[in-house]
Image (tube, rainbow, N blue to C red; front, top):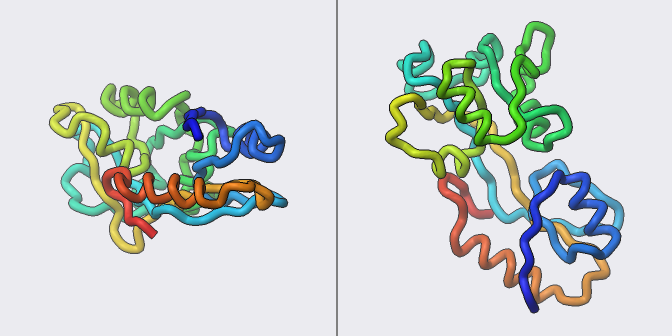
Length: 184
């Protein structure tokens, strides 16, 4: 059975899964679709990325309340990761919160915006781990407990005829989980 990888917005992946164009997708919760079964694969913490001279750089752990008053850089509206950050850090969406202050089109764009001093961002730990750790322009900090996280699932049609393929895919993901994640 060949494996093809396809990246897209969750709403598009869900539509392709329902139509049968895709057999299985990897997405983050919340994800609820009629006729679709999902299984948690791992839980991934978020972390804060900031310019190296930022006042929060002196903190070893960041309280989510601290970022609500910051110039926060997020992905644009319609991006599921943006929604995950807002859900995990609800203080960002209250009156006076900064959600939507500046938007980027990709996490890589957000990284460069942070490095330029435009603000701070909340990113998945796996994204932060894939960026150069010795970058003199950026610092990474984890949140204090209870830390905001996202749960990543695999999802497939309830009628999918090859459940063993789902098990193999999940095992392959768990065999090499992204940095900073906790397998379920």
